[in-house]
Image (cartoon, rainbow, N blue to C red):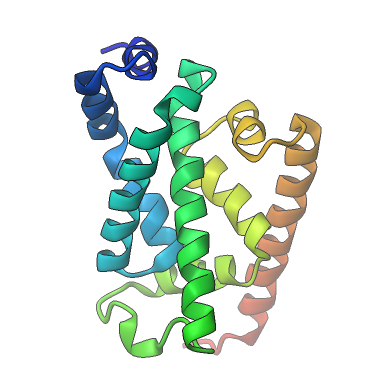
Amino acid sequence: MDLEKIASDAVSGDEDAFVMLMKAYKMDLYKTAYAYLKNEQDAIEAVQETTYRAYKSIQTLKQPAYGKTWMIRIVINVCQAELKKKKRMSPQIIEENEMVSDATDSFLETAEALDSLEPQERELVHMKYFQDMTITQVAYALNMPEGTVKTKLYKSLSRLKRWFEKGEHTRVSK
């Protein structure tokens, strides 16, 4: 299945091609939404909103090769808007009881480490390592030069490394 051709057909107005495109990327969109919102229901709603927005503006996709990147950018925007809305409604966005009780320590530690990053840094790490996007795709999605993406990504990874190293010193040995 040639996703670039399908994206091109969708841009041309082929509704079946749009449906195929959404099916191809639905798990990537859900994972991205869940990484931001940390709630299954909110993530599903974000994917639904993304589907609506993508359908309404599919003709604005300039390069069909970047269909996935374009949709990831939409879901990120939807999630950021939702987080801003929640922040206005309540000063505490995420309560501890919302965390999955059977999550492993490493997952929680990784989530905590990612939360220690600035939103733009977290976004870069997520796009590059969780969505397996290339530097070029990340640069296109964020509308910034590749060199800037590389620099910011390097700084973000350095901050994560320092966070984990600091965490090693604070743990109690068993």
